[in-house]
Image (cartoon, rainbow, N blue to C red; front, side):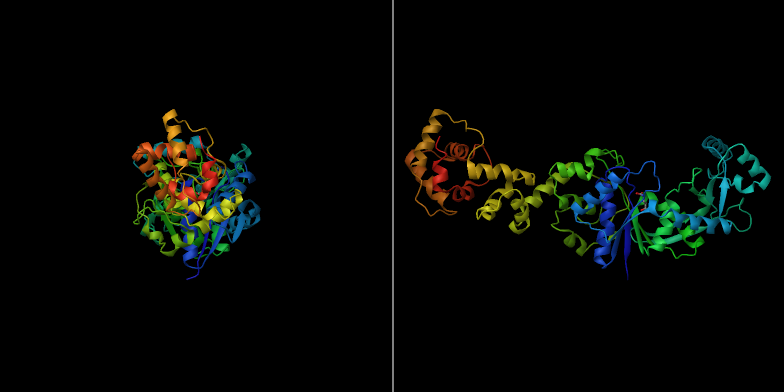
Length: 457
Ligand code: GLU
């Protein structure tokens, strides 16, 4: 099967981990089927869309490992949407409406009071040309609704009309078009809501699979009708469950702390975000996965469950640590080199410190400690200072390796009678300036005999 997917964010703010879930479901689905990925900026709302947000979204996706095959801006395609509008008007499927939001709200309440479904009653469809002319003379500009195909002869008498599809996440789905209002496609100011541009582009760009959040399930009923009205075969649809905050609220562009940019600044690895964004709320356990290719290998959108998934930042931190602690030197080397950590000690250094990292940037501190010494003067009692001096006098000759620490501390134990914490803590403080950290057995050969003696308190 040939697969083309699209991720369609509106560039009105930063993307957060919930948007990353949608982007990755599409990306991994495409990867798995050798397909294409379109990044399509949903920027028909020119008031709220900003190029700087589009640039930031693209940079965030790139950082996560998502590089689109094509990037499109819907704001550059208004002529295409206008052509579709004309076709719908010519077919009598798009009709002008003049109600204000207040009028609509009043009618909605009336319908509810009469125990009618609170959908738009198609009053504007019944206006004759003279009534329309009068409303326009009042200065009203029309907005335009798509006439849903949910009636036999009389649009005022909608009847149950099922739209069904086999959702690639949720399985068989049904939406009754009689339960929906005719959707507004064009606002009074001539701007487009996302429904029509999305359908037109999905059709023209050969999108085969539309994967998005399950807040769009109902829209899909109307969109399938619109695909058909425009003479197109609808794509496959998949609606994944949404992520919520720990307290159960939906994530929004305003959940600043969970934006990709903020997580990156906090030292979270891209694969920690990707692993959690994809695996949370699915049949698979949440575990650190080292690459998008590995995540794609057995990716199936149907693994997502149907209920919302609670997102816990602590889980992200745990994944981050697990990824760092297991990261092979090859994967770390370019990033170490970018920090100036490139000499022959880089590999053993990485293997020694990775298990102590909460975030990658902490390697810089450890490199400084290893190559230049403790950052602060170790706080040693007089007793401990004398002990460390005595211990340093017992350092074995080089060459040193992973066994040197053991050989040395055995000798120190015999000579001083100290053991356990009383033996190790003063040595650790003298050598690193810190009460905890990587195994000293691993650090010692990196310091070398001269470097170790230079730390004499
Ligand atoms: N901009 C819409 C959203 O983010 C796109 C929906 C879609 O994928 O069709 O919800």
